Each structure stands twice: as C-alpha cells, then as structure tokens.
Image (cartoon, rainbow, N blue to C red; front, side, top):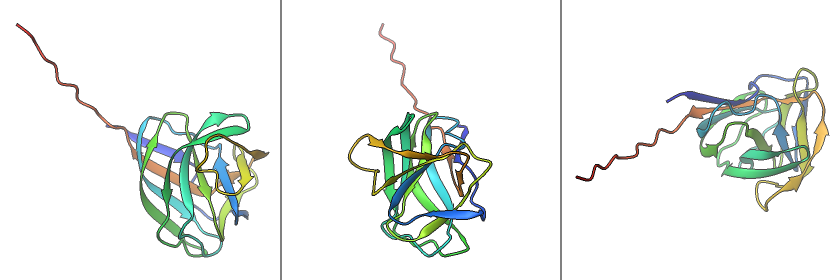
Length: 156
C-alpha cells in the first residue's frame, strides 16, 4: 500500500471562507487512488456538526462529489480539527468542504485556486463553481491505496 495525500496543509492562513459555501481546493490533487481516512482542517471560527467533507472530480468550473462525510464533531476556532473519514478517492480528485455555519482558514496567495459555490454541493450531481485564483484552503487529507487480491483459479 502507498500513502495518499490530498489538499494543502492545515495551518493558520491569512484569511477565511466558509459559512454557507462549498469550497474546493485545487492545490495538491490526490496523488493516488484508494481511501482517504483522515482530514485535518484549521478552524477560523467554531463550526462543524453537519458540515460536509467531500472528494470531487471534474474540470474547469464543473465538479461532482465522488464521496462525502458528514461531520459529527466541531472544529474550534484557532485549532486544527482532525476528522476520521472513509472517503473513496481517485488520482486527480480534489478535497472540498461545505460549511453550514462557521469559517475555515485559507491563504489568498501561493495556491492553485479555491472553487466556491453557495450551498451544499456534495449532493445532487455536477455543480458550477466560481474561482478565487491563487487561493489555498488550510485543510489536508491522507489515506492509503487499497490493495485488492484477485484469486487465481487454475482449471485442470
């Protein structure tokens, strides 16, 4: 098995975003396919329960959620919250977050861009997003590739 990483890093940023938006981070797409098992988010204000972490695929301004996790614990302001998840991911997917209330940290420079749309876009198929060029979200995910063994049957 190989390690998977997706997203930037969960550190303090120079700005914030969230409340009522789904945001996707174009910085550091998934390096492999498998399972994301942990996501870390740097909170700007208290938020969490019923927030949704998602893994998205697409291009340009059109993206679809591949898999999602509804948060059941809160991330507190000024801290890194680490959430245990079980998310399917494919190489090239990007990490996203819907905040039903509260804010998360981001940087306005040094990233590949943050896509954003009003409302929860982790359900309902393809959604259209707008771009904040150069931004990066202060969240990251990690996991492992999944090894599938296929039995070999020999017929005599």
